[in-house]
Amino acid sequence: MSTFSFSFSGDDIEEDQSQTVSQPHLSPRSHAAETGTLRRKSNSAFPVVGQPMLSPQKHDLETLLQTLPSKIAYSTLVIVLDNGEEILLPRRELWDVRVQLMAEEDDESLGNLAQDDVKTGVYEGGFKSWESSVDVVKELYKRRDDITGSSRKALELGCGTALPSLAIFQWLLARESSEVGGLDLALADYNPTVLKLVTLPNLLLSWAQVTRKEYWEKEGELEIGEEVIQEFLSALKSYSITLSFFSGAWSSKFVELVCQNMPSSQPSILTIIGAETIYSPAALVSFADTLIGLLKHLDCTESTAFIAAKKVYFGVGGSMEDFCDILRTQGANVQQIREESNGVRRAVVEIKI
Image 1 (cartoon, rainbow, N blue to C red):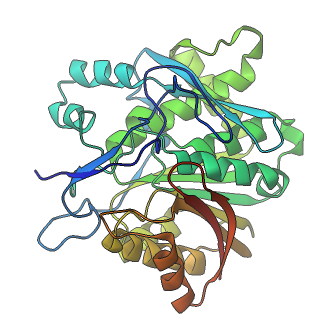
Image 2: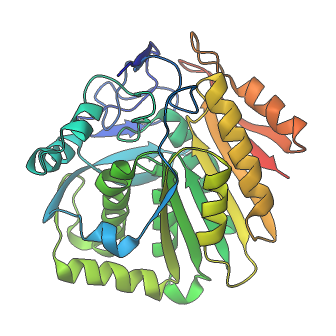
Image 3: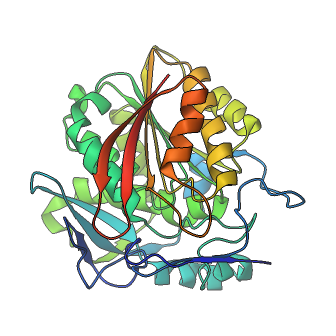
């Protein structure tokens, strides 16, 4: 199995200690994604000639809940917003993921937690959190009232640890249930194991943080028994939140699967989110085609996407400029709404059809 290596100083968030993400500098003791490099030794894990890709699949919430361990160890990422306020996002510790994988004797997934951030056609880096996802959270915060309004849909592509979705989830849960008009939240990652091991656990942790404020700590363990799971499901029902999970490669089949399975009982407004999904020419083409397909075909009255990435992926060929050019040739209206110049330059763009 071939792998690939980029060297980008400071482009992800460290996995071993609690971290505050602020502007303009990252804390030297950071947590839950690495601060050094994005490693890869081969071409993109998006469509590669001769390399089979994972087929799109839908994953049932109740089935995923049954895979949870009896407890989850976590620490908290503190994001400092542009106005100085903070968002606290608890995330499962990667060492705790390793413990579960060793208990399940899942050597393949354990290998994905080793030195390589991406493996062609196997693993897309979803166990780590990247700075571009923090950039998206900061922009979503400015629009949180619109995003959490009545009859909303949100879809995070390449979700991994799902920082933007966690923020939206928390904003909803922090309100009175009578004030919430409902949310259909869908999360998609190339790897089903990422959804099982970090995406869903992080959603459960965010729910627990909001609902157990009086004794919640920034680091610790969440005991998960049947009572906790039923309380979580009851909260989703009370707030009219549906959770959908998808895996597999970007493709027309992926678009079809999502369009067929995201709830569409009433007119709604759609927000699509993505971060660090365009790191090579092949990746940005397949992702752009998938994004346009979803914006055009999901049953919504209005659709907007917020995509964050590095301005240029040196040595690999992907760039935000090329991505935006492809979108514009397909009729999209693309506007850059944020740029970060500290360290590796990054941007967030807003896309409408």
